[in-house]
Image (spheres, rainbow, N blue to C red):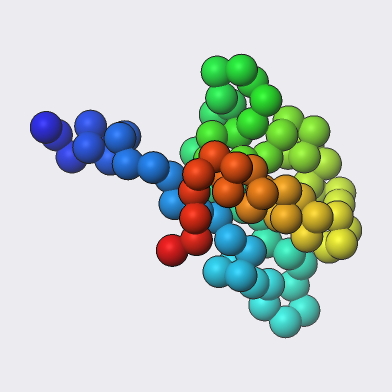
Length: 85
């Protein structure tokens, strides 16, 4: 089996805000991991677990709203069976 095929079968890593904590004086980082494609149903990004509305609103959101999205991202991952490493 090729490396590419075996990587495709691995579950995605758990995205946790704790591992991407903002640096002093900076805003809450995006959960984007550069895998920008929607699920077959079109409801979530396969890379960052955000909805289309969350993706569109991210740039204009304040830190409080971004933290709320991160909580939803983590909840969605847990609901899908992913756990923090």
